[in-house]
Length: 115
Length: 111
Image 1 (cartoon, rainbow over the protein chains, first blue to last red):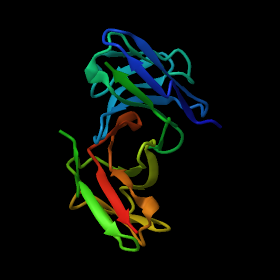
Image 2: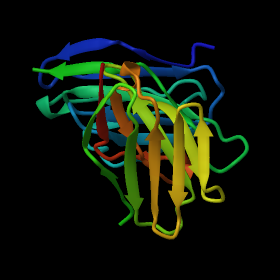
Image 3: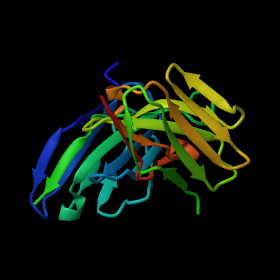
Image 4: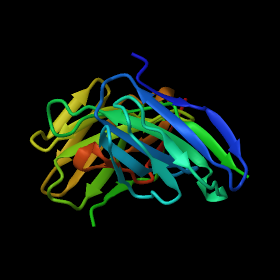
């Protein structure tokens, strides 16, 4: 299994541009998440999804949108990039098997700079 | 609201020493306590977790202890090695496996 994969690895955007960060997992996990991590800080939950067609806001959703049309893919959309969105973005997934809590598996991250 | 406080924010030890990181939580309903390790420039990875019906769990050089009465749990690393240098997080676990992260503890192990 490749686990959780993210593209691109790096991106530089100009203010006002749009882009989509891609996330794919091949573990058949129902739950998927998007986080951002600013330098020296912990991760902040942006959006999450509990299955295809179902998404919900996390701690810091403003300026982002998501969709979940398949179990495997959970893209994150930035519509009007702002310097405050400069960060490292991590996608993660987790299983719903067994107990009520399960490990989250993270992708390698996308480093985004908005200038 | 629900939160987790983690101490210390930075920790510096000599190789071979032990390291202890403590987290205190406020929600009595919490019953799952994970620890994630993030090496510089890498993704977070689960290293150990404990559920509320267990007081201690060990995996080689790492162990986690849980005190539900005092609402705190701790990560213990023995015989530290340079590769243990990383940021360690004890996120609050919520519904749908959501994780709420604090700022973490930056551990430096000096040879």
